[in-house]
Amino acid sequence: MAELDSWEDSVDDEQPAAPAAKAAAPKPMGFSFNPNASTFSFSPGASSFVPVPAAPAPAAPPAVDSVPVEPTTDIPAAEAPAAEPAPSQEIPAPVEAEQHVEAAPTDSVEVTEQAAVKSAPEPKAVEKATEAVKSMSVDPKEKKTKEKPPLETLEDQRDHMNIVFIGHVDAGKSTIGGQILYLTGGVDERTIQKYEKEAKDKNRESWYMAYIMDTNEEERAKGKTVECGRASFETSKKRYTILDAPGHKNYVPNMINGTAQADVGVLVISARKGEFETGFEKGGQTREHAQLAKTLGVAKLVVVVNKMDSVEWEQARFDEVVTKLSPFLKSCGYNVKKDVTFCPISGLTGAGIRDRVTTENAPWYGKESVFEVLDNMDPQDRPHDKPFRMPVLDKFRDMGTIIMGKSEAGIVRRGDNLVIMPNKTPIKVVTVYRDAEEVPHAMPGENIRLRVTGVEEEELSTGFVVCDGEDHCKPGVTVVDAQLAITELLDHKSLFTAGYKAVMHVHTATEEVEVVRLLCQIDPKTKKPKQQKPAFVKQGSLVICRIKVAQSIALEKFEDYPQLGRFTLRDEGKTIAIGKIVGIPEKKKAGDSETS
Ligand code: GTP
Ligand code: MG
Image 1: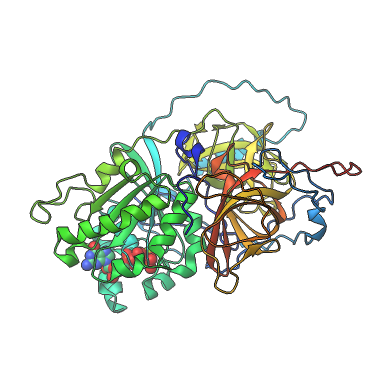
Image 2: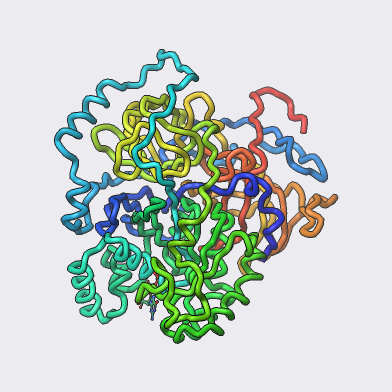
């Protein structure tokens, strides 16, 4: 594995990652409600998973120019990259947009009375929305003013945090998520009893808590999360969104989707004998998840050492996990003292989650509970003053077009004129919702829904980016320069070279890519570029290369918007590299001579 602590990422130090948003599941997702969330929120994890290779076809982007690109200026090039053949000439024609199934918000999930009451639109709200849509159409002649009115004060001023549960299969992620909803009043006794019976009928008695998060049949029958579950809860200090990632290796793309939206990761480790070991060995998801989380912008980790009840709350076992994990987490780029907290818990009994573990259980611990750790984390330093960016996570039609996503930069307000990239579609914001609540504006880092005019739902795809109307992502990007850390190559493809094809996951987008050329290799020790241009590199290398994307894509340089400029490369279902975009080469005007 490449040592990542120094290539990743000076920008993070200044701007603790508000990461990219949920990457695309292989096809645009339907969504459904998690009936067990104490505060209602959408679960975009409702569609069935399609295994890798993913790469959906977003709606046709603008025609790709067949002109050459100039090299970016900011490559620490040992040698200036030579003239690039027009990369787009080989790019397959954009594929027709996939047929999107229009998802009815409540389909396929039973909704408890409580949630149903919260989610049913009131007749007045319907009228209001219809009126608002009518009065706000996109007028291309409208004068776009940069001066914005002062922000209204929001009723709920509590900070919001997205937390993702990651870790090896069966570590207890869904159980802990379910327990949190139970502890915070999102699930009542009657529902728990129902799940207990259902779990028993399926011979999965201990799984009933996980059923709170694992809402679909397949997940319950197999006891494995497939889609990233989503729910919300709140404490007196903060509002939280839980993203419950699947641990199974087949579903890593779904885990990436969820993790990309998170501010904080809860890395769940099973303390049970043998289970910690399996998760932590080479190829185990404890390793892969921790590494991906850092790449995807999760700046802080709470490592919960779960199932402590199964080892009689033995201090030696807890210490063993801490001692073995710490150097590994350091190698992923985490500052273990500053960014990582270890907590012993039992997801099944709830011990150590809301309240501190009792001295009866663990007299040796005596420190904060998981809620206390989360509540006391500093609020994210989010880029308010930057132009707005929100990768599209999902969309649907409901009295206008609704776009869901996590805002990554800038403030969005009712009435804003925005554009959707890469197609440069102008839209106007009719209503802003933060979770289910209508608000005059939303800050970066929030999970929001925008009701907009100017675009039809079927013209949108997961992976597009809603941007400020004036200052938006570059249009028509099909080539990027990126710094890669080659983490683990496949046994039968052990050389990374020009021509390597993989799938790129960047914010909510998933695209097929091909390495056009290796520009320069970086010495892992000195971090300086090496003189010789490499013909190939091996696992563990750092390399800057030019990458061609199959279809034009909206993204940013890492230094400008870390959340939209960091990505992972996967091949045959395995993460092979993590990277950041260091340059987006300018397109040359047709007829210009190649100078580089
Ligand atoms: P995937 O979604 O498949 O990755 O698994 P997961 O991490 O969500 O695990 P899940 O919550 O489904 O739990 C797996 C098994 O571990 C279930 O049988 C749980 O009852 C059990 N389990 C979870 N937490 C605890 C715990 O604190 N103590 C004990 N004894 N068992 C637990
Ligand atoms: Mg699970």
